[in-house]
Length: 271
Image 1 (spheres, rainbow, N blue to C red):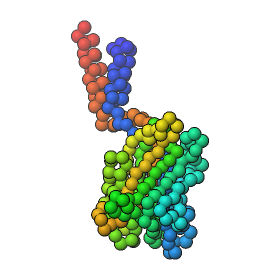
Image 2 (cartoon, helix red, strand yellow):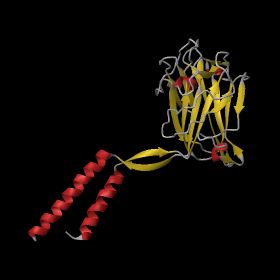
Image 3 (cartoon, helix red, strand yellow):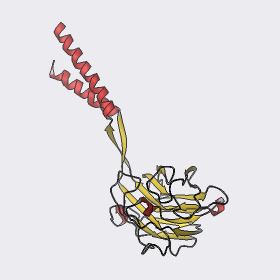
Image 4 (tube, rainbow, N blue to C red):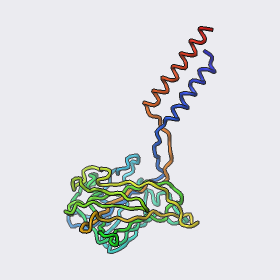
């Protein structure tokens, strides 16, 4: 068999393998936020991060969580000086010279449970901002000074620890709503999608022609008598698509390539 034929078959296998690729998101940067309420049972819980583990977004190994101090929050607050998951100031992202900020508004208060083990998931789900129901009492959250026209994934965590009212919390960004059912154990022993966290995806867009963008939304209790809880967040900014072939898909194309080789050999022998 000629070398050109061999190269042709190899090229076919590679091209076909790329066509059957699985797209995996690779972040440009990740920002973690740990909301911290007040509790005399947790020394230094206020104003310092209580969690130092990996979030539900496992593609990132960073364990730095920005502490969002709720100790003096009444209706609204803004967290600045944000660092990325590796502990780098501003995360390298600025928009017109302004670094990322997180805002909270229309809060009914804050709270904290008793989880003191920093590597346990419960340490993240242990402190929360509280909002209510109806919509006029919905809590507000936002991420400001973001780079414009950038794809994002936003993880929002919700469980109310030992607060007693385990009602669901609904998050809404634009026309999209997602609910954390809050049915897992109050210690939050593991991250469970749709239970103690939800994930939004989108594009940051742009505010006018400023080069800046924002993500803003609300959270609300599941019924008129329940409260809503926001415990933390992970913002994954600037994802890019990297093709990674599936083993099964590559196997199929390898078989196809082998068939081409055999067919070519048979045609050569007949000739």
